[in-house]
Each structure stands twice: as structure tokens, then as C-alpha cells.
Image (cartoon, rainbow, N blue to C red; front, side, top):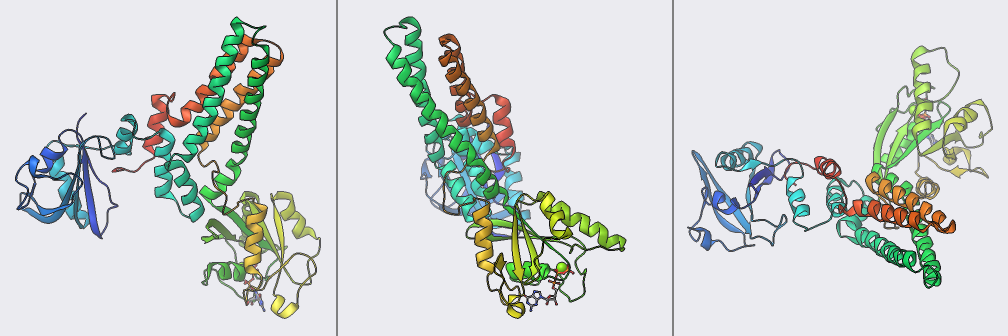
Length: 437
Ligand SMILES: Nc1nc2c(ncn2[C@@H]2O[C@H](COP(=O)(O)OP(=O)(O)OP(=O)(O)O)[C@@H](O)[C@H]2O)c(=O)[nH]1
Ligand SMILES: [Mg+2]
């Protein structure tokens, strides 16, 4: 394969910038630019050791480090070279241009990882785990991404495929010897039912996975002046939204994210709901209700002592998925018997409120192995459907159909690791990587 090159660090002023190459020509191309007292020719380069030297190209002279990874013991499985240079974007780009002009080709997004996948170094889902690690924004997301990247999730899927393959071979045999194999066929369909259960459990973890990946969206609603913006500021730890005793201070939706107990929360402060003749405020209130609709949880704030079922509450309840009722200003108004008591002013009760947010959205900050990728969820959905049809066909004693369904079910699972994935699927996965990974 041709030799590819790219900048692997993000561009900008930084301490170090890395240009990497992969392919048969990687080392010979590198040595057209790199020299050091101990490295005169290819044989002098010790694999996996950083060597200090000079990168020279035209007027460019840069003191840098070079490391060589010899195939197949490299990320891509091919010969690889990385230059660590001073991290100025102009400088790093000059180094890249030099190796490109010497014959390397600019790598496409994710091409290094794609080569690793092609070389059998990792499966498609493990590659997706690497991308998820890079884009993670919370501990929970890092943890799930690690489970993907390290192959733990992959092993679980392989286990399911293995069980289904055993069921399939028993059913194939029972097609030829239906009477002799009756008990075995019954047993293996019980095994199929257990696989079905596990797949359903995995699928149901996707709800939590989505929230871990995108963050839990929490909209703060309520009447004017109850302390919504104060609560947002308290949760953020700095005065993001304007707070004042004037009713109708907030006009627009103000959004900011925090990480709580390792989980990302997207907080939305909204305009207070009330009857108003002010055109701009009315638009703001419409936006508040839109925010309530799109949120995973709504925190409905009232002043302590005044929580009543009224028109404003029912407007919110009508559109929200989940509502938590919060009584604010307990520092001056005292606590209520129902609802969550907080003071945005002193911070009292605020952690308990966030704990409740995590509890009602079922995002367990310690649980692992939630499904993170829509592509995986889709494969499991199709696999599950085929398996259910197979189990039905068995009940109707249609063994031929059982075989077809079982094969379809196994194939859909195999797509997760990339085994039966089409080029289109593989292209899609890697196109979402950054260049240089
Ligand atoms: N004592 C006390 N005052 C609070 C508390 N929370 C908010 N306030 C005060 O209540 C007033 C309104 O607070 P905001 O945070 O602006 O209220 P809001 O719900 O965002 O109001 P709108 O944007 O107008 O809908 C301000 O004077 C705050 O200082 C609290 O917990 N205790
Ligand atoms: Mg406000």
C-alpha cells in the first residue's frame, strides 16, 4: 500500500506537534529529512526508540524527535514513522508538506485506523471505541468508550454469536435427523431464547448510552422570578445568566454543560412562564416550552410554599417527558413537605437535586457496558428481530425457516465487528474520524 502522512496533533500553538507516516516507504522517506549523529542509514534506526536529530528540508531546520515502528508491530501493522516537532501550526505543516512532496500521500480521515482494521489489528467496533475515547466529554463516556475500544463489548457480542452458531449447527443436523435430534433441538432453542434475552437487555441499555454520549438535557422551567437563572448559575458555579428581582428577566434559552458524578448534563435556563402582552417575552416563553419538550428531564421551580397545580404547571407537564418539582428559596421561605427543597442562594439541596436527575433518567454513573453507538443498536435490533422470527418458526416446526433466520441473526451481529460489514458501512465509520487518526 502507498505511504500516507498526516498531522496527528490538533493544529494550533502547542508544545509538540506530531506528523506520522504509515506504509512501506515510511522509513526511507523519513531518512531523506532526518539525520542525527547515530543515524546515517536505515539500519541505524532502532525500532520503538525515540531518537533526537534534525529535520532538514530546504531552509527549514528543526530539532526534533523521531520514532520508528517496524511492521507488523505498529498501530497500522505497517512500517510507521512519527516526527515530534515543536508544535507551531506553520512549522508542523511545513514538515508535513516536506514528506508529501517527497512522495507520501495525505491520509484521509481515519485512514491510519482503517489500515489497522484491514490488517486485523482491531475490529470495527474497537475502532469506533477509539473515536469515542477521543470525543468523550465525561468520565461515564470515557468508561463506555474504553469498554468498546478494549474489546470487552466485542467479546460479549462474539459470545452471543458463538451461542447462535452452536444453535445453528444443531438445527442443521436436526434437519437431516429430525427424530433422533428432537431433544437437542429443544435444548438449543432454549439457548436461543437466552441469547434473545441478553440482546434485549443490551438494547435497553442504549437509552442510557445515548444520554451518556450526548449528555442528559435538563431544562429549568417555572414562573417568573422563582430563581431559575440563580439555580443555573449555582449549578455552573459562575454567574452565566442575568439574575434580577424584575419579573421576566430571562428572555432566551441559556444553555451550558457541566459534568456531575462523571455524567455530562446539558442545562437549559428558560424564560419564566406568565401571561404577557410583550411580544419578545411571548416568543421567549414559547422557547421555554420547546426546551421542556426536548429535555430528558424538566426541573420545575417554584418558590417554596407556593407549589400549586395551575395553568403554568400543566403547560409544562403536557410537553415534558419527566418533571422534578423543586421548591427554591428555602433559606428565606422554609422547606415544603413535598418536592425537592433547594436554595439557589446557599446551594443547599442542589446535589440531592442532581442525584435525582441521574436517578430518574436511569443513568447509573457506575454501570458499564451501555450501548453507545446507533450502528451497534441497529445491528442488534435486526439480529434480535431475525432471532425472534427463528424462534417462532421453530414453534411452527418450520426448520428451514429457522435456519434462514438464525443465519440472518448471526450476520447482523457480525456486522458490529466488521466481519460482514459492507464497504459502505466501513467508509461511514472511518469518515467520522479525524485526519491523522
Ligand atoms: N433568598 C433567595 N433569593 C433567591 C434565591 N434564588 C433566587 N433568588 C432571588 O430571586 C430573584 C429572581 O431570581 P432569578 O434567578 O432572576 O429568577 P428567574 O426565575 O430566573 O426569573 P425570570 O428570568 O424573570 O423568569 C433574584 O432577586 C434572586 O436573587 C434563593 O434561593 N434564595
Ligand atoms: Mg431568569
